[in-house]
Length: 336
Image (cartoon, rainbow, N blue to C red; front, side):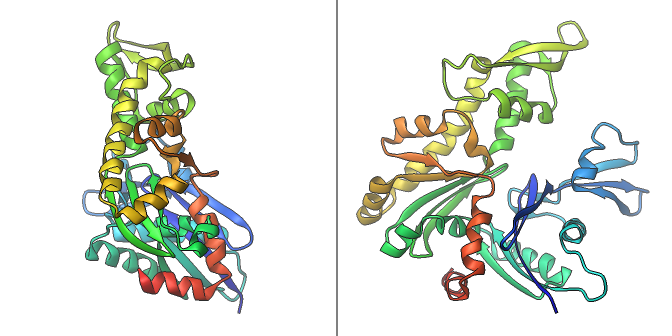
C-alpha cells in the first residue's frame, strides 16, 4: 500500500498542504459557500471555487469560515472542507493510500479546542496523525541554534492571531497568543478610509491595499487606484489611495503586537534574554510581510529582528526535517 506524507496548516484565512519531498501542493481559502433551506445547510463549494462566487450569491447562500483565531468553530464543515482539499492532492484508482499527517496547531489552545482538532482529523480517517505546534515546527529552520541548545524567540503573525514563544532544544519554554493579525489591519484600514475620506470599501479591498501599499515607513509614497463607494457623492468611483494615508491604522495594530512582545521578553530569565539578544527575534507568518516591520520592531525593541524567507509557508517547509527524522518528531510531540 502506498503511504503519502503531508503536513497541513489550517489557518483562519487559508489552508495549506505540504507534501513530503514535493513542497506546497495546495493553498486555498478555509471557506465554504453554503445554502440554507431554513432547516439545514448544504455545502455548495469550498476553497477557491467558493471564493470565486463572492458577490454572486443568491439570498439563501452565504459564506462560512469554520476556523477563527485558530479555533475550529464548526467541526463538520471543517471536515468537509479538508476532505475536499485532500481529494485534490491524493490520487488513486483502486486502493486508497495510507496518509501520515503532521498537523500544525496554534499555541495556547484550551483542552476542548485541541480535542476539536483531533475530532476533525481523526474523523476524516488518516492512518497516523501527529499534532505539532506551528512555532515549534518553524524553530527547526535553524538547526544550528537547536543543536547548540540556545533559546529562540519566534513570533508568528498570522491572519487573525499572533503567537509568541520562546523555544529551546525543541521544547516550548513559554508562549502566549493574542487575537491580532492581518485581518485586524484590514478592518482598521476600512475604518480609517470611512472616517477620514468617507469612502466605503470591503475587507477584501482593504486586504489588497495592505498587500500592495501597506507600510510602516512614514515617507512611503506608494499609491494605488481603488474602487470605492464615495459617501460624499453617494456613488461608486475610482480613487487614488496613498500609503501615508494608512500608516496610522497599520501602526496601531503592530504597536499593540509589539507591546505584548516587549512584555513577554521582559518576563524571560536573564539566560534566555541573553540568547535572544545575541541572535535576534524571528518573525514569520503572512502578516509579517508588511513593509518596514523589521525596522519598526528593531528601533523600539533595540535588538535584531528579521523576517524569515517564505514567511507564510516556512513552518510547513521545516516539517521536511520531521518527515525524515522520526526520533525528532517523537521527541517534539512527547515533550510538548
